[in-house]
Image (cartoon, rainbow, N blue to C red; front, side, top):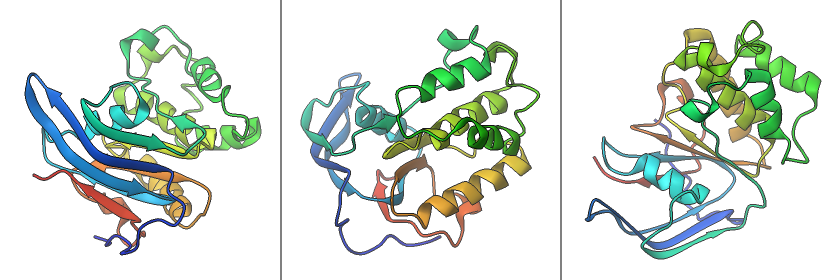
Length: 208
């Protein structure tokens, strides 16, 4: 497992100060503070510790009960192609719609290379309900990568992927970790084995 960089990011894209969130009347996140900069950041924690909840707070789909969350990123990519509300959407059309708000999204030929790289060529013209859990997840990963969003959130991104797709995702994230233009937040139980040797810019530890 790689270790976080010891210094605070010089150009933070996200800052949380004493963040509070409760679920069912019980505190889930209590006084959580962190800063996110460029590169890959891990949000780690055991079951029920609030990993997915924190991503939804960052994305703005949930609101904290206390504390502040300041986003300096101009664009944010947080999409869930597994949502039943998208079942009837054709995968390719869903992907295009997700990329439309991002002016710096990859051009179509590069998006197609991502689609091919994740083994989605034969599925891109199918409605999402016809795709397996893993294939739907891959459509979301292509959208996240192609958006070129300043800050991208990934919830257990390696889950339900086949071996070649795990390798493709690992290569993509390794390239992003070495870049200087985007921040990625990965929520998972631990630093994914596929990223062994890849620099982790920081860890937000929610406990076991």
